[in-house]
Image 1 (cartoon, rainbow, N blue to C red):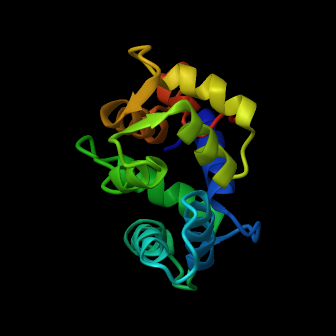
Image 2 (cartoon, rainbow, N blue to C red; image 1 turned 90 degrees about the horizontal axis):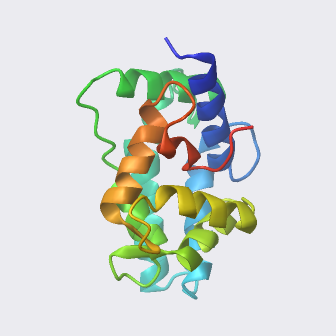
Length: 178
């Protein structure tokens, strides 16, 4: 059973993923994020880079988000999203198989790390505040080296999904839930 805080956090996450503000997550949202991240890489629609990014986002839709579509209507409601995450993280060995894909999408220059600027652009692609990005980046950069390594990023996202109460560093992954 989700704690009140965990549910609040997951609903915040849901709103971040609802790119078209329809109050559902669907394939359209994945396509919007693909377009936004392609623009960040100056990739023209139909280019190989755009196709690669779109493929990654459609993989996320098909292999993660759509799995929560309990009623089979082709879209995920806030309740379905929370239920899907709750079921996934109930397994103590839960590993988010798609977080590394997100890392690769956010790592715009492909150098295997996320800079503060790439993190700011990540937040902008999800229509979150750039000033908040700097604060969140400082929280997630646990070794204080000025970059987010893949292990830091993956750990923070895992902690975001699994931590039931405030206080965990990973709770900041998608910014403030308040």
